[in-house]
Amino acid sequence: MRFSLLLAAAAVEGAVIGRDACDAPGPDADGRYTISAPGIKAQFIPYGATLTNLFVKDKNGKDIDVVLGYDDVAYYPKDPGHPVYNAIPGRYANRIGKGQYTIDGVTYKTEQNDGANTLHSGTNNWSFRVWNVTAFTEDSITFSILDASNSSLGMLGRVESSVTYSVAGSTWTIKMNAKSLDQKTPILVTQHTYFNLDAYRNPSTSKIWDHTLSLPYSARYLDADQGALPTGKILTAAPNSLNDFASSPNLALGHARNLTGFAGNCGADGACEGYNGYWLIEGAPKGAAVLTLGSPFSGVKAELRTDQPGVVLYSCNWMDGSAGLKNTQGIKGVNEKVGRSSCIAIEAQDWPDGINHPEWNRTAAQIIGPGQPYSWESSWTFGLL
Ligand SMILES: *[C@@H]1O[C@H](CO)[C@@H](O)[C@H](O)[C@H]1NC(C)=O
Ligand SMILES: *[C@@H]1O[C@H](CO)[C@@H](O)[C@H](O)[C@H]1NC(C)=O
Ligand SMILES: *[C@@H]1O[C@H](CO)[C@@H](O)[C@H](O)[C@H]1NC(C)=O
Ligand SMILES: *[C@@H]1O[C@H](CO)[C@@H](O)[C@H](O)[C@H]1NC(C)=O
Ligand SMILES: *[C@@H]1O[C@H](CO)[C@@H](O)[C@H](O)[C@H]1NC(C)=O
Image (cartoon, rainbow, N blue to C red):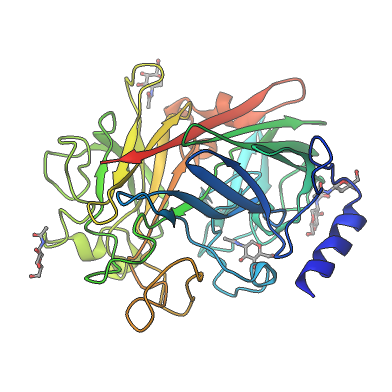
């Protein structure tokens, strides 16, 4: 049933291109497009240009699925929690302060769908659209979207964008491009990837706090208010303080979990524990890994390389245990649900709400006019700790 629905959707979109050679075109029987290379396998659906599964080798040589998602691809659009699992939010990801921005003296009002602010461009965001599959081979897939003017309130001018995912040598590479076709408009995209490098198979904990996290070029981060909106201030984390992941390569993600302030460190008047903020990447040598996430339990390590100037870290505070795990994850009777603080979303991107902070000098990179190229590139390389 799911399969035929998907084929019908593909036929309506009319733009599914087959694999090279005479391999079966289109998705598998469960609705997923699979790409692979030795040591890595990634699966995707057109909805949100979403990564549904990512298999890498653990320390025992077993393939484990290290990202969050659902088995039932038809559930993604229905999920009331919609955590933007491994999808592409756009055209302007993260928050727009007070639901407005100004270009050339004209103020545009956007949808206030996250308190007073706009999140991921509002309720018609790109992570809720069925993208077109425009290329598909054994190790690469490209999704495209044409975003009509004002299809997200206050986002004027048409935008064309595409994302290409590819795998090679234990590395997953993500390249995105966008073009504004008619007028200047805010553009800022990301891949909103959620990890649990244990595939929820650690019997002693499903929390993310035992993972290690290192951001050697990210001593500075953006101060944020209770609604996770940057205040404009740039702060520096002292070694071993709440927001420090720069001072040592071996800090646990939960290194600060017993410190005062951890419980309210991501706002919501104290209700958000852990992390939901933006760290600057500064002075990284070209080609250097700027972030390493690891898990001593599975032995897996994931290294991020990116051309973006910073990264959002969100440690899954708002996961409330209502969402189930995929059948590739968890332990029956022990870990069966996506519980609070059991994962981490890592989103390489430009400075959030930079369009409202001219003093950061990010507006030229975030307000894109016709003829101006916009591109984004990151990769995740998997190995063992
Ligand atoms: C994105 O759009 C969907 C569908 O309109 C909506 O349900 C969801 O709340 C939006 N997401 C965010 C984060 O605003
Ligand atoms: C997919 O392509 C079709 C045909 O070109 C187009 O009408 C449709 O708007 C595209 N869908 C998206 C999400 O861009
Ligand atoms: C954008 O859409 C809203 C309705 O969602 C409408 O009120 C507004 O006039 C539109 N703006 C433009 C410039 O078309
Ligand atoms: C925090 O407290 C818990 C419970 O007392 C303890 O198990 C854990 O080791 C402590 N963690 C750190 C990083 O201090
Ligand atoms: C923006 O540019 C000005 C002028 O060069 C500089 O003083 C300021 O530090 C820059 N802001 C940031 C956040 O880098």
